[in-house]
Image (cartoon, rainbow, N blue to C red; front, side, top):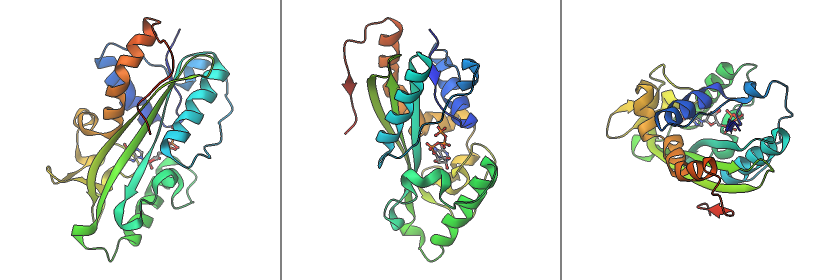
Length: 214
Ligand code: ITT
């Protein structure tokens, strides 16, 4: 049975697929299902809740085991915003690229008067694995610490990557080659914690729900 990554975001699929492939696991995207699927409403208050909603909904809909990621940027000077609203922070843009640009512009404006020492932020990723019947099998979480730049830099990645400076490198996440981002990222960390659960699922040894998430 295929392992589905339930995301409409092609960048997430590329990242997760590359890391999973390197670990000997094959993951398919929603296009492999071969029909349009209803998008669940992500109305959870936390990344973990939204990841659960997506994984359970797409697993139940397809009958396939399903992995989902809910992620975003938490900025300390904004009390954790944009947080779970990261994807549509600015509320405008018809395409993913337009929304990303508008989000980055809004974030820079919100932080215009915030000094360098107070621009700390982190990407957070909550991942959830659901069984074909929609039951939650495992939940993991990863973070990617940095600070918000004063202007976008770099062309790799997506979303807020051009704005998150990795402190020990002095480069933004969008200036990192994909493999280097994956080695440091929130999504990479969450996925690596998920590997034992995926291996157990492949061997059909999942005994019951196992949670690593508050
Ligand atoms: P799905 O819900 O279909 O997976 P999405 O892009 O809407 O796709 P989320 O609801 O999890 O996914 O929102 C994630 C947003 O957080 C994403 O659109 C970016 O704005 C930001 N984000 C998350 N991970 C990121 C990363 O690795 N690099 C840059 N921005 C990221």
